[in-house]
Image 1 (tube, rainbow, N blue to C red):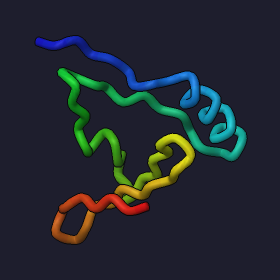
Image 2: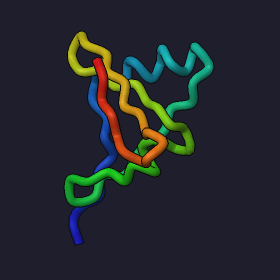
Image 3: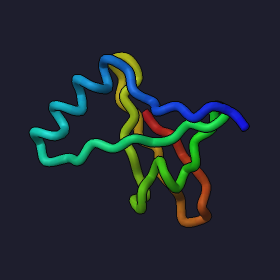
Image 4: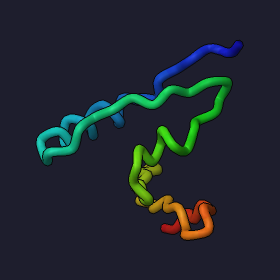
Length: 71
């Protein structure tokens, strides 16, 4: 079995404070052997926003249950 990590960086933690003040609930996602389960990542929604450096991306689940990443 591999180690379980929680994905969080310094920037993530500062963004969590901003999200919390906007009404968003922070959460942790388990990382096992360098893998995430998409069900944990999406948590019942069909789209998430990913901040990568100064860029913002959308990751969404299609009607055919495929993933699409757009900038």
